[in-house]
Length: 66
Image 1 (tube, rainbow, N blue to C red):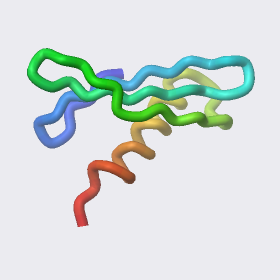
Image 2 (cartoon, rainbow, N blue to C red; image 1 turned 90 degrees about the vertical axis):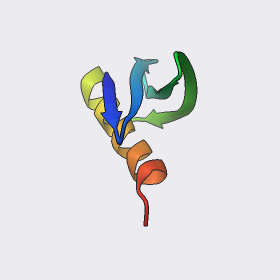
Image 3 (cartoon, rainbow, N blue to C red; image 1 turned 135 degrees about the vertical axis):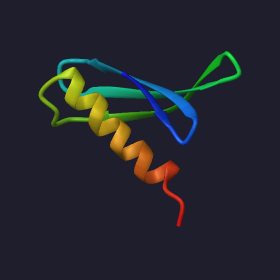
Image 4 (cartoon, one colour; image 1 turned 120 degrees about the vertical axis):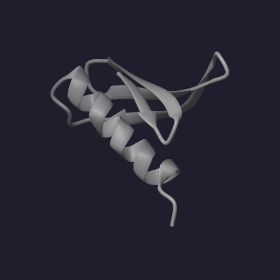
């Protein structure tokens, strides 16, 4: 899943280990891709839902400005 938020590019990937989804958020800067966070999520039913939930968590915790 690729996302652009406030002129920043991100990608989100999810892997299921049989019990949990491990959702990884990457930031794309100047042609480089850097891993930012991995979330361990247990309730989404599929990869798309897991990616969406991981992105919501990342956005809320790291992109919201007060």
